[in-house]
Length: 382
Image 1 (cartoon, rainbow, N blue to C red):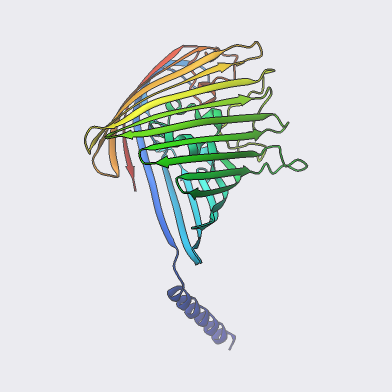
Image 2: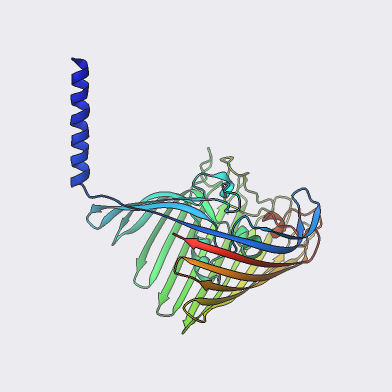
């Protein structure tokens, strides 16, 4: 008897659920991804144990342009011009399939939110910071994907856990507000990040400004503020951006996946310094579409550092690069790239400094002052 009743209940529930699925609006869910892989020749490479290897040819952990990823995003119409949205995006190293972004399952993005055509969008979860969102639009390669063309990211931070982000458009102006909760008992400020970004776009011109503030476990702060612009002239797009980053003496983020203040943010610290470090980073470049299949990208970025150590050292790091892309289709392209990076002053990682940008990015020069790289890569998106 009980068996028959159970079968009846299951059948009724299944039928009701099937009917509900047929009659209710279905969410729009899509799967997407990018695979970017390169073979790269690099000079002055240093092994993780500190042994200088010299010149090296290897398959990169990813490509020169984008990090490989697999993502899911969706939107459900809730009525009244309001939708529920979500995005889950995981990163991986295409050379060996291992996880990227500190090994987090969805380390690139993981958020849910509500979007209204009039009132804007509010998203909750792991998201990009305002600084990256703003300046990424004004960088020739969208901030790149290897230490030599993405080192500026470690000065501003990339993604932040526990983030509330509000965005809305007001005519040609897009506003973005970020509040990343520190989540620490007893003090809501430590570990937190706040940011505001404004972008103006009209015809071929786009200009963006932002200000972003982060606090570590001891309320030492990092303030990053900047401006960027792009302008389209026929087949050429020009890019320019500048940001200034100021780190208090002793500023430090918690180790990855520790749950501590500013963990998982890819931020350079200033822990061993008794002076406030200042970085002033300028990037210029262009992208030229020679034909529908062929494009050329040129870029140059430079960072002038003051108070890099407690002795008041100054330093400098500069990178110039060029890329030629051939697009087989909208989804698949092959590229050849050449880059050169030069360091001086306090940015020369002579073995006893921990605040050099390339060293923090995992690509130290072993006391050398320059590095040349040549790469060929293949990228496919779906």
